[in-house]
Structures are given as C-alpha cells and as structure tokens.
Image (tube, rainbow, N blue to C red):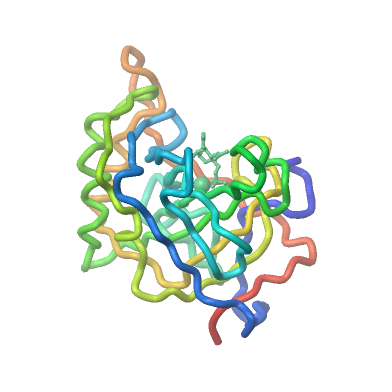
Amino acid sequence: MAKGDKQSPIEINTKDVQHDSSLGPWHASYDPGAAKTILNNGRTCRVVFDDMFDRSVLRGGPLTGAYRLRQLHLHWGSSDDHGSEHVIDGVKYAAELHMVHWNPKHGNFAGALKQPDGVAVVGIFLKVGKNPKPEMKRILAEIDNIKTKGKEAPFQHFDPSILFPKSRDYWTYHGSFTTPPCEECITWILLREPIEVSSDQMAKLRTLSKSGENEPVKPLVDNWRPLQPLKGRIVRASFK
Ligand code: SG7
Ligand code: ZN
C-alpha cells in the first residue's frame, strides 16, 4: 500500500490549494475521563483513550458523522529545524502532533482501516518559539516515566482539546497512515496555525529511547516519514 496513489505525508504548496466554502468548521467534544495511559512503543510517544463508545468525538469539517478519538502521538526531529511529517511551502516544523479518530460505522478500528472514510487525523504543528504553550507540560512531565521502549504510565483526566491552537482554519486531503502498511483510509485535517513549544521542551522529547530498559540508549528521534507524491490530489482549505 505504501506505493499507492494516496500516500502521506505531503508537502502543501499554499498557492496550489483550493479554498472550498462548503467546508464547515470542525468540532471536538472530548471527555477528559476517556484518557487512559501514555506509552513509549519505541517509535513514538502515544496517549491512549477509551474508544469503546462515543465518548470523545470529532465532527464537522470535511467529515460525515462522528469519529471517535483513539490515540494521539507525535513525530519529531533530531534538532529544532525539522521533525514534522507534513511540510508547508518548504517549511518543516519541529514536531507534528496527530490525533487519530476512527469512524464507528465500520464496527472497530481494524475495520475502519480498510475503508476510505475510516479514519480522521487532526495534525497540529509544533513550532519552537518564545511563548511555549503550557498545555504541553502534562505530556512532557511523563517523559521520565516512559524513557524506554515498552514503558507505559497512567495518564488520566486529560482533555486533548487544550492542545488546539486559537484558529480552527485547516487544510484537508485524502491520504494514508505514515507507518507501514500505510493504509489509504485517512481524511487529514491539518491545522494552519502551529502551537508553540520551547527548545527545552523539544530536547525533553528527544530524551526518549527507542531501545528497551536493559539495552544501550538509542535516542528516539526522526520518527517522521519522508514526503510522498501528491499524484494529482487537490488539497482544500477551509479559509481564504
Ligand atoms: C505511530 O503512528 C503510532 C501508530 C500509528 C502510526 O507510530 O501512533 O499507532 C500504533 C497503534 O502503533 O499507527 C495504525 C496507527 O495508528 C501512524 O499514524 S499516523 O499516520 O497518524 N502518523
Ligand atoms: Zn502520526
């Protein structure tokens, strides 16, 4: 599937994007009680949510119906000048946060992966700046508890909507997961406005290890997939 026609990530060239006035606003309605654990799987740092019923959902925008929040995770680089998966007009951000939701009309997550409208991922860019978002602190405070591959810690009473930037403007296109087998089941919703983090916060993320507890430390960095060809796809924007 990784060689398909709808792969992610892509570079967004803002001059080629089509404004679509039919694209409405998106709404997240998240239950802080749905957060369960945070873990290091050797490839990323992930927060997992209870998705047994419609507790935390995303609606609107390019989507039909409600999609359930399953997990969020991050991609980052070995230094502040790269790390995001999507690239905007040649600009790479220090990191990219992905909130992964699935369409419950397909029964379960595994079923949703097989459908073109199965999954919706909200992507938020993290930019290094002077006014870091305090909301990232909760996640970063747990890094020391999940240093090595396979470590997991409780992560409860967390509303991930605190991580959204002020503006709800977004770009949207149809693409894939960025890890094998790269199923082409994702409606990407990429937020135009990045959130700010500090260089120290980025450094903290890079202290995670992709090796296990009793193995030599291998820094978990550069967990982003390279850009994939657009192959005629049109990226739409919710804004002018
Ligand atoms: C991260 O990104 C993990 C994966 C995720 C993958 O490596 O969060 O999740 C698990 C359960 O390992 O893959 C199927 C899936 O969610 C790709 O997600 S992404 O396309 O949003 N980057
Ligand atoms: Zn991702």
